[in-house]
Image (cartoon, rainbow, N blue to C red; front, side, top):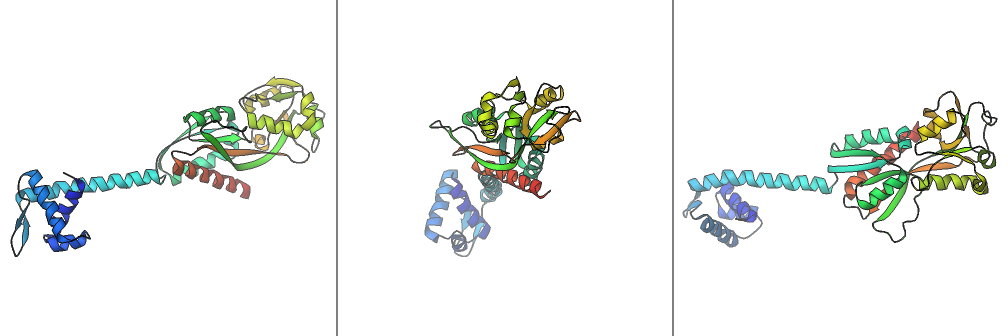
Length: 303
């Protein structure tokens, strides 16, 4: 028994007229009669009583009409649900994010995405940029919110692509008593003269590369006091007087009174990037999340 046969049967059962049923199905009457006859032979008994004046359902036909209506309604519902998955209205999404995104786009993007895609299960994982690149490649996350450009992936598969979501200034965080702490801004050379709390390149390739670009030739003589993974840890070392750290300006939300935040000369910036695999197996859902990222960033820019 095929779904097509059930649809043909239901058209005749609803119309109780082969001609009207054929027009409803946009087909001619003879093929419709053939298909209904095949269904009757398959079930082993007549479904319609036919005469020259009228067509009516047999008891078996009335029973099949009730059951077929439920079956076809369920099939149509499943098809609609599958279209929702294709359109990104349902499903699941796992997104990684650098913790610094907590202080800019992340709260708003979560609110927007859950409002716009309430039938998509969203899982968020705090990960460094390097960890996200690895997980994007192995498919364990769908989208990443990373810091600054990632290294060229070369011929590795799957290919990763990024797009800029949010840009903010880089600042130098210093112990409040440091000689540079009261300056309106510091030059890269001055920043490089401070013992620095830095980050591992393997875990934060884009951000470490960006800081080195900003420091220029002075990066070669940098004195690394500590290497940490999280900016909260870096701020702890700064507050303890161990050294300074170059961080995104949104870190102002975290700094205690014992830390001074000084802009860098030239207003160099750092960028949050949306990263994903190409091609993406769930492009509609990932695309919806990235769209929410851009909208969240736009709302920040208006503040």
